[in-house]
Image 1 (cartoon, rainbow, N blue to C red):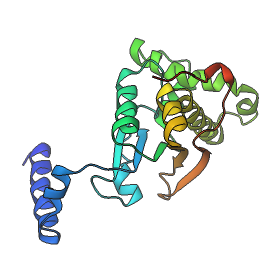
Image 2 (spheres, rainbow, N blue to C red; image 1 turned 135 degrees about the horizontal axis):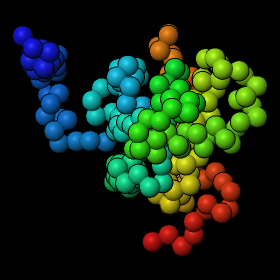
Image 3 (cartoon, one colour; image 1 turned 180 degrees about the vertical axis):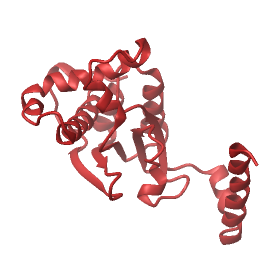
Image 4 (cartoon, helix red, strand yellow; image 1 turned 30 degrees about the horizontal axis):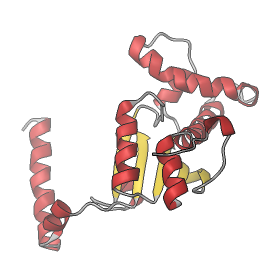
Length: 212
């Protein structure tokens, strides 16, 4: 049996188990999607949103990319954000990074990771530049990497707040609440490090008016 055939077999077993436990499970999912949360996480295979939060399919709307970044030119991310906020009406958006993130480690080097990945990791380098004085005091080990991971998560929450998508929802519906979390691969626990309530004021240069 090949590895992909094993995935298909496991899928059948999972679906069968779900129906045995709850015969209406899939019929409910098919006709209803009302998640309370948008999860923006890292693509790392060790950080599955539903599993580490103990939630079921349909409870979290998920977007994942390398190092859980919110980039203002990323149409993929912005389309997910628009749909989650404007259509699904999520109440919370979670940016979840993880300690030991390979993307952040790569951004701390001067290695050439080829053009596309260099462009992506440049956004983490920008976070490093903003916080260079603090980070350089931590030396070259895991402490500096993990602190940059936390700072990167915080900056991504701020990037969410800079979007007109979030600001419009804040003004009109007093939602969503923004959260910055970091997951630990070593113990399976989530560390909440930053949050912004709906309507929080940011630097006025980023605040929009006259929403359509």
